[in-house]
Image (cartoon, rainbow, N blue to C red):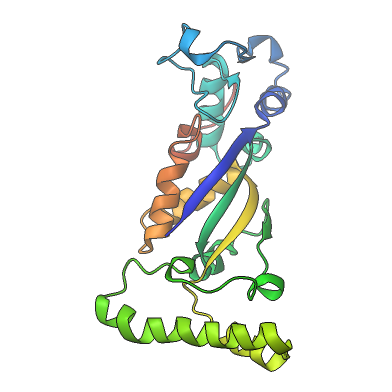
Length: 229
């Protein structure tokens, strides 16, 4: 299970200005900040990709150059590092352990297991369990949750660190944790091409979500070119 909420995408204006600095081609830029409601916009259904993420429209000239630079490789596509994405992600610990591979260009603030693990009763919905069969849920998984709640109650009564350790070390990796994450289009491009066919549902769902971002073709396309304006 993975849930992504409160996504924001920003930094387009600075990214495009910087992209055009090497060739001093700012006069060819045709992107603009949009102040028109989508229902009233003549570009609706055309190249405008505001969606729910941004009020910025990337023009055809700029988008063509962006694609050339992306195809030319990450050294040429530095502008991708300036297109920022923030979001809240709730996912199981086993997924977060793989996400933590991506350390460069990312920031994350997580809900704390250290401080808040015992703040609420454990329930089935605190865990990703969609692939567990009925026999597993009925016996061992239910027993684990009952055991976690047993030590949670003890810990809340006496604050004995030994009871806290029982929770921490018994906690399954399917426990869902929420983090607020910041990354950028360059990082998302690395993630997308490395993880889109991963065996974990969470990675495939994450990559499908990436495809919904504005101008997602900058993330999803491949190839080599020698991007020049």
